[in-house]
Image (cartoon, rainbow, N blue to C red):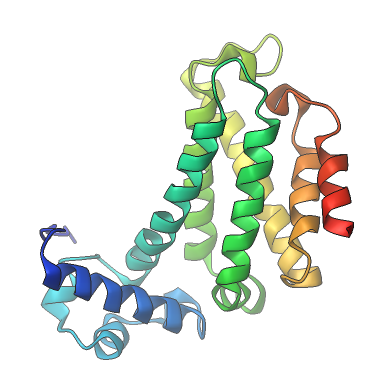
Length: 214
């Protein structure tokens, strides 16, 4: 269903978005988003169905928009640190700590969606955002590609998908085995397995591991 965009400057729009955000985060912390209906959301947010469809096409689409809004701010911080000609290790470590903090902040949502249930929608929205982030970091940057890689769009897409699915996989394993009690373990593990051609630095994972155990 096509979503008709409301005027974001309208105070009523801001208030409705806040209600929808709170509603989907609460409901998705109790059950996988695939089990949430539009009626569940409209009742929780105190709005009607026509208003809902001005903001999202489905509960999963609404959750994607809410989570992506959160992660977009983190991606902006990573890009600000990833200056041309600099190693990506610092930017990536900063981003991973931010991602871990995000997961801890919404631990009920991620535990419900990725541990208690296998929510394909939640898994997909995480991968899609991460793929877009890695793609933006790699496009047109031969220095951030494997030696000898062509850097064409197909290669960038495949490398980005590999990296993104790896990060999400580590996140799921972290949540399933330790919960959110040790964010440093997640960060250190991802940094340890990221390829040197991407990070451009040695020893980053050891520094992060020291932070997680201190």
